[in-house]
Amino acid sequence: MNRLTEFFSTDWQAMTAVDWSGLIIVSVLTSLMFALYYWVFRPKNRDRFERYRDFVIHENDDFEKEVGHGQKK
Image (cartoon, rainbow, N blue to C red; front, side, top):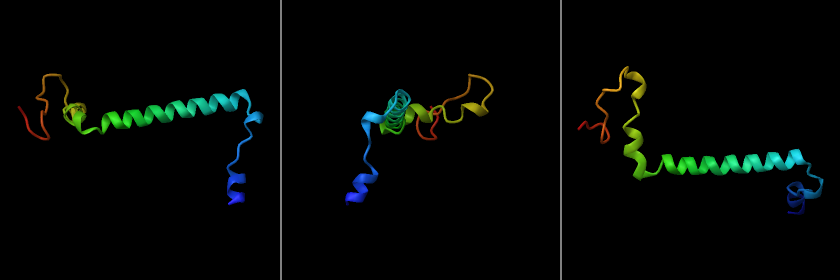
């Protein structure tokens, strides 16, 4: 177990400004990705995103948007 903790140990004093900025950027992007995944895959928001799942194949904005999962209103 000592070799494993030695392998994952970090010398915080030796980190440069570039290392710190990279760590902060990766941490912020990771938290934003988790928040985005939670927002998109939340069952409450499913109908909102399902409505626009095929917007690319329609040429105009006057198409019938799906309300439920495959059901048109």
